[in-house]
Structure formats: C-alpha cells, structure tokens
Image (cartoon, rainbow, N blue to C red; front, side):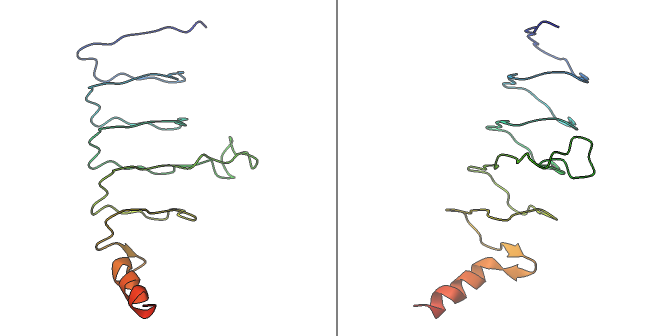
Length: 128
C-alpha cells in the first residue's frame, strides 16, 4: 500500500484508526480531549505545550514476558520529561530504577511514605 498524505482541517471528531501506520504524523493546535491510544508504538513521541490534566498513562515500556510481542533482547529507550508540572501526581507501581531528578522542586515529594526533601535536609545537616 502506498503512503498517503492526508490533511485534516476543522472538525473531524471521533476518528478511529486501526492497524494504521501514522509514522511521522504531526498534530498542531488541535483538541484531542478524551482520546484513547492503546497497543501503540509511540517510540520517539514528542509532546510540547500540551495540557494533559487528568491524563492516565499506564503499561508503558516494553511488553512483558506474557505478551505475544515480548522479545527479551529488546530494551526501550529512556523517557525524558523537561519543564513538566507533575504537582500532586501519583506514580504507582513504576520502575524508577536509575532515574535522575535534576533542578526540580521536590517540596512534599514522598516516596513510600518518606518525605524526600526532609530526608535530604537531614543528610545535608549531618554531613556539614
């Protein structure tokens, strides 16, 4: 099947795309409230200047060993979040191994019931 370039303007709500290749697509100045994306390869996805309040992101990463597309030789590319407001958000049952947090406001940041900003203040005080 040949690649087609389709340009959509104005109201095209309730589009359904199944078994579709939308590689290198671009969405600019669009409303995409209440969209659902599942079983998708979003490698290299870039989201800039988006309001995603109330969004739910789950089951992100490589397929687990029970999934038909599981391949133990594949590793996912690391994610990067820049200038994001995750205020009052929850990360639950996530693999955060080797995560680096730089220049972030961690006021009230809690991991497994431990306030991290208080913990860091105590460590800094102890090693003065």
